[in-house]
Image (tube, rainbow, N blue to C red; front, side, top):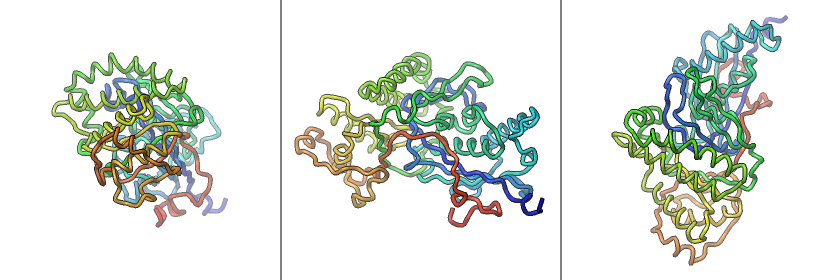
Length: 402
């Protein structure tokens, strides 16, 4: 075998989606294994609009494991990165020792280079760590020849990452075991199940949040009585109701549960001592806008949810999108022109009646929302077959365009 083909890196590129929880995960019972105090349920967003792309390469010539995130080299010794790497390599060794021909025994001793990019702002209340760790684990599994259940490994990188291992509607079952073996993600329905459902991400801020999720959760678990009540007495029933609402495609039930659960999550943040404020004045205005819009029509047409940040995620049905987008633009006049204000899927034009504007009756808040991303439910991670899409060059370093 020629020398250069031995040194040629084994390269795989994959993409993975962002997910938005409609029944929220907040609080761990085990920090190291990332085991939650309650189950949660999310919708996977379409990768045409929001995704992480990751390339991983192994080669005999690599001196050490290295990682680049969004163009900058980061510390590969980060404990959560190490958990994922260690677990994938352990499973690869196990498969090789079990005599599986699919595992290249040589690559197990090789170092790995990883390069990852998001096409959206990191740490801005869009679940970047979820997409990032899901993509990392999915890509490493392909490089090292590991198959089977991967969500428990992704969970050890970032809790919500386990839900980004599947498309559509996904539950993270909290599990009971101390070792976390039964704390897994499971698809409730595929992305094709509810084709009319649409999602608008209203980006109020792309700044880093003041209190990160990890430390915020720890403080809430230690100090909030409401959080314990939520985990023990509220979420179990809501999970059952939410799964039924999704399966029935019952938008009013889905929407009401989504809003109530978002509000209760932020109430537990306020009940934390000292309190944590993730919502901004813009967030509160969006909440008012949604309730007034729904009450104008006498039915629930639109729902909001907020993660640990000020950005609103709006759920609605396709037929209501054109008008609601106009409502947002009227009450949050953008500083950019209309074209750049709406990213993602195409929105049909619509007119706003004076009656609707008067019925909502809020003072417009200019520049409150920087832009919106229009998307829908989408698939889980997948492999990118085109070698031109690799983020690492043949030398194992990030390409100049990354």
